[in-house]
Image (cartoon, rainbow, N blue to C red):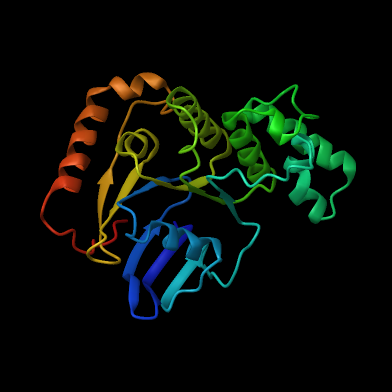
Length: 259
């Protein structure tokens, strides 16, 4: 099987500041990879390179075997700040990429309706973003990305701005949606609990060693989106393991990629 995402010795520098150094990994189709680490460790820079917003200083980043040279419809980004158009309704926001692609109004409406059903926004098609709660706005942003049917979804702390209950609900929702769509997801977070609950794998990145990271394989009962997984002994054990690694004084050295 060919990896859907691959970094080969990817480095990124801004003048004298080295953000990433010789970063190597492979992510496989259908995986959910949580990227965890302190501020300044290069998480968002890595995501920006995958999205095509930032070119690496050296090395090669690939999506589905092709070098990433810019943004593309095969990758969708869900931002923390919702990034919705305030003057558009929920339906119009969701259909925006389809309209840009020249799809018919009928097709735009059909896809938007399906996406609203998928993320639980039925009945809000004519609402504007200011009329929605934070969680509902994030659902709208998620639906807009899903409408373009990307192979890879990139999520940069998308649930950080909502309350705890809404955050847990959205975590379960994204896992349910991934189970239905089989989309590959790369998810940046500062929360150990979130990283363990969501990810098949965790990349724990190191601020002191740009491009260094530790990997953790996560195995929780299926379906993964069941909230009871937060009480499962494997969840508790893995949370403790990741926490201890984050607190450890040992340096995280660049990890060998796994197949």
